[in-house]
Amino acid sequence: MQITLLAWALLLSAVPAKAIVWGTHVMDLSFDFQPVYQHHDLLIELGRVEMAMEHLEERSENERQALRPRLLSRLSRLRDELQHLAI
Image 1: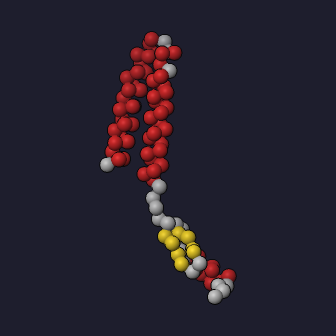
Image 2: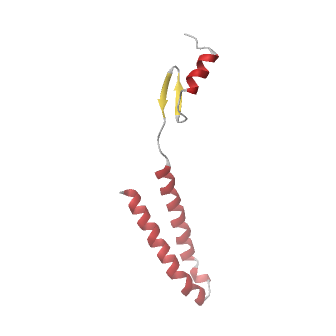
Image 3: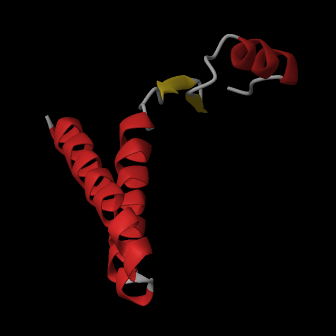
C-alpha cells in the first residue's frame, strides 16, 4: 500500500512532537531526559568544586581561609542533591 504525500502530511500533523512514525504506526517517545541531565550537571559541578579544592594550596593563606568553607559547603550541598536524585 502506498501512502500519498497528503496522507503523510495528515498523519504527521496528528503525531505528537515526541513521536516517530514507523511505517503506518506511531511510536511514542515521551521519555523525559530531565533527571539524566540534572544528574550529569551535578556530577560536572561536583568535579569542578573538587578541582578547586585541589588547587587551594596554590592560593595565599587568606584566600584559602576564605574559600575553603565555601567550597566545603558547596560540596556538601551537591552531594545532598545527588543523593536526593537517587531516591
